[in-house]
Image 1 (cartoon, rainbow, N blue to C red):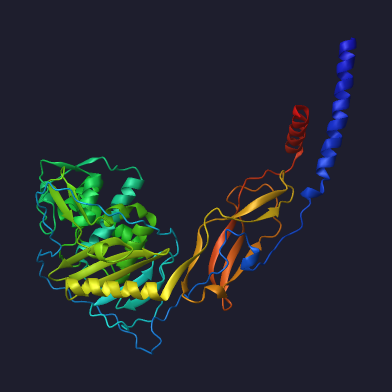
Image 2 (image 1 turned 30 degrees about the vertical axis):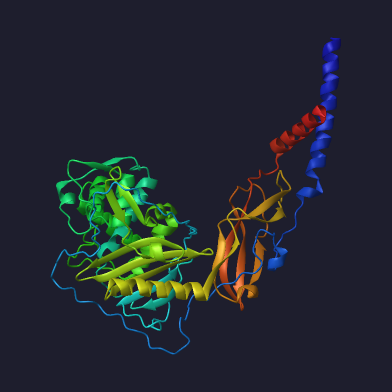
Length: 479
């Protein structure tokens, strides 16, 4: 009896102390939070966020001179379907070892749609029939010349084929080590090829290398059949993806780019799919930056059809293409000092001119603009108090990388503003939007990034308060 009497006394004492603890916790001033809505200048934000940042207006005039807008014309496609490609770098037997040059890709992922709202002109006096320059991260158009004219893309078509191959890799549908067979259809393509034999197989890794470096038609058809069953089904996937990306000037008839009536696209659409490939699958530059390499245990040599890989600083790809009807095309990408550009040239009169004019576009972009980072995904911006939360404060972090395209010399004119939502109360979940950070130049917002909660925080109730009290008691007993 005495034992039970002592237990009862202890229980009563425990209940009294427990009630006092809960009451104290419930009245704790740390859980009473007044609404915060903060506007700050760049210097008041966490040091991880860049202070001197700016951006360019979305509608960029690439020339101060008043120039008339060039009209977009629809090219008349002839019915001649000559299968003559100039990208032929025929594979030769060679046992010598060759070097592989890998460039670092700093492309930044972004969901911002490319903006074609720009005055078209040809201030750089390009000879090519169509040309465009975009910034990869934001997708902003920096130069435009006949960018919606429908033209034959030739082997630049393979940008979309490579995009779907990379997508299949990401989805686990295929792997780099898969051995891909070659059908009679794939072996019969002609043009640029590595002379696949229907009796042999190559890994997906080697197939990608041959497609990106040597523009191999036989390999891209083999991959199309491996992924979709038939080339026709793969081409349907290409057109579906083009529609998804807003490539309204594009109709694909094949996956390789050999001339075929109705197989058309525009420099604008090529820029769209090139940006998607580089942004979503930056690892593709492991292939597109190879200058020379070998296959088949060193017996077959590959040489990149894109000469900018060797000759242009920061080049990351991407794809050449030419036929007797398409003339000379190129999607050229390069990155310098965190600024990534994509220049597309279509219908250049010669291979020399396409490389010269792509260089001219890239030089123009690097000379006029820079990309300024305001912060990286997950950077801590500040802390906030939480109303009715089991924890009294939480960190506020950037939801995504923050940055903007800027005209050189205007980096110091940016105003940074942080706004926290009103009446934030627990429960909150990690990643929940709690505010925004905006960057303005001359009174106009040039970039916005969401601010999100760093941690999940439960709401205070009898259970959570009891749990907290018990944890405190355990900590006290341990100490």
